[in-house]
Image 1 (cartoon, one colour):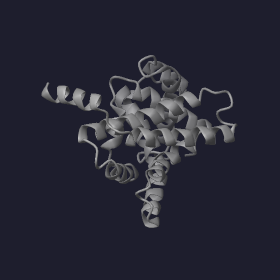
Image 2 (cartoon, rainbow, N blue to C red):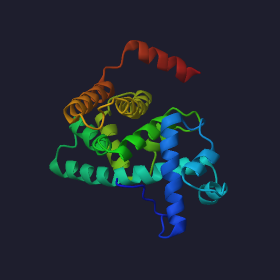
Image 3 (tube, one colour):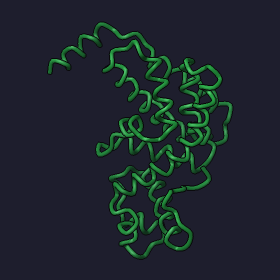
Image 4 (cartoon, rainbow, N blue to C red):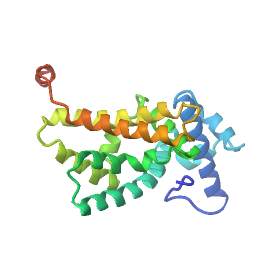
Length: 229
């Protein structure tokens, strides 16, 4: 993920402007949140004196956020898809920890780059924004890697009550993105590889544990109340 790449990216001034706007927005959103950043600030950070540039390329702030997500997630998902297929071919697709690793490894491996850190912070801000339901978007996306990996996770959770399984899948996305964003706040986040490896593997352990934890009677009782409502 050396740079934002979009299907719409073109050569010349138009493509350069679009790319600069996406890079500026990703950085500012990641630092301050989606609602704390104005379109005027993004235009200025991208070096655009024409205040209509952002509207011309993306239509709205929502369109801009969607474009960044599609570009970044698409780049990560191409790596994920290849690893999922390799895992299936190896016969280890029932190993939940291995599935979690191929699902999120392509993202965690970017934590030693400024672009990777920028994207993780941006994604965490989207996750925390009430106007977006990032876990639902991720789980229902048409990206091949996400779809294939999610199918393996669903199979691993086959004995769970469906409502519990769905909630835990959401928790998985929330846990990973929030934890990674918090990690990037460390002053040595991009340079301390041993500590990062320990953190990532511990995170994967925690995700596996959360997905497969026994469902308590209290949870089932609370679910029955919700279902009646």
